[in-house]
Image 1 (tube, helix red, strand yellow):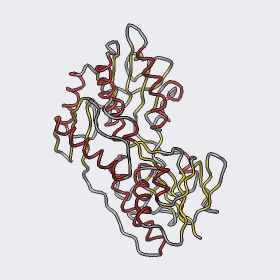
Image 2: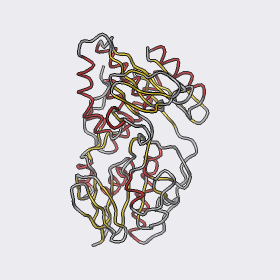
Image 3: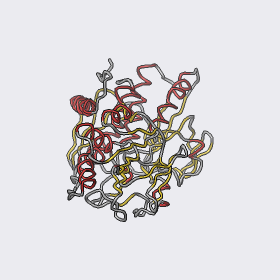
Image 4: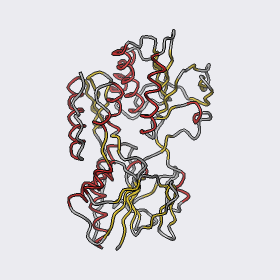
Length: 377
């Protein structure tokens, strides 16, 4: 029997598993390799930090979804590929043969050019590691002290949402000694968003008591100190790094065609540009039509990936996919308030948060999340 291996439990592979649960892949056995038994939906992570959701409401149970799809689950990470032998090398020392391979492992934190970050920063990714570290960070903040400085390095949607979420948590739990600073390399937060949204975000940061430090690039981290270009060091007790996506080292080492940054190049059918029995989607992929690294496009790629994997395994023609040029971005601001952008258009308000909350919970219900996803008071 031929074998399809799904490497990684990202948003696109969740849709593949749901598709397989509805209709098994005739003549093929399917294996899922993922280091965690659940996948945390990144769009709801700030809501968990802010206290709006329990973590169970933000988690898709990969193991349960794999069981429903009759897919063998391997609770380990992929560490390399042998494309001559068509095998995946796993972190637990095992080797898994494949006839077809789909990769949706997600990115690594883009910290390779920041000395000291491995020792002195808390990256947001991998998300499970951030979640595991969060309770200890909360305990540190709660200890009596005159001042606790928390710096969020990175002013994209992830960093800005986390800053707002932590500030909301500080307000509800009385962390009056917590000082939050967001640092970004542009003059305004949320690079790539419409100017009106960026200005609105900067005003909201100031209104919530969050310091904004723009036009600033970190050059080195030391214990409790961030060195920046052209200015004095910035003191911190904790530095949370949300600096964008980097490709895992094994993608280039594998021999797969990659772009200049190491992301796997795929055609419009989501097939590898160099190995037609390998597919990739999500942030680890470099699409034929370049798009930002965003969960929005990973989710959109899921249905196409599911159909094309099924077509490939059946020897049928595959469909091309051109991601939409504009995507809807919903950015929570800690309280029950959010920003929305679509192309050059932007909106904000409590109604946007309710819209985002409804979309997020509907997404989770599609994949069998049983925990109560209702917002906490």
